[in-house]
Image 1 (cartoon, helix red, strand yellow):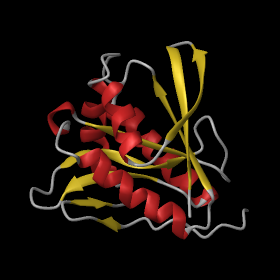
Image 2: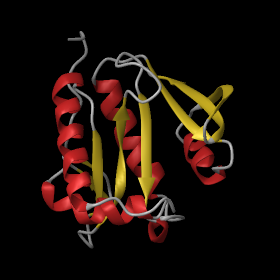
Image 3: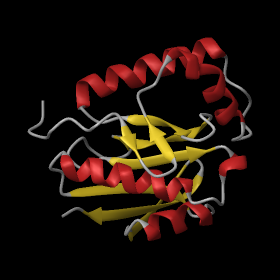
Image 4: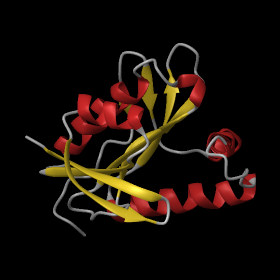
Length: 167
């Protein structure tokens, strides 16, 4: 296990709550993933994915957390730290929101809370990888202080690698 503190799994912002996954998130998580346009995963498959996310969190001390709007109490997406294409020492920040939640600053707000949580773990640097086509996501990362490092190509096209040093 690493020398890092465990990330906080309950984060509150002015408008949002980020918290651990619950089995009751499965249907909403399915609907979110269906917005990608690659079909809808089954709820059973998503329950397995949630169990895998929780197991990974127990191992790594970092987490991808569901985002709920505080006033409405609805699930609007997720944000957190993952190993992804990176390492547990320098994890990736990842987020995805329902299209209906785009354009309200929620990703930036959730991202700031996750950055603060990452700083508290003692980490010195985070990564993010985003498709070059995803301008809104690149704008969010810019607002969060990420800078382009390099571009690579994978099965889904060009990927921008961004990095952010932590205080």
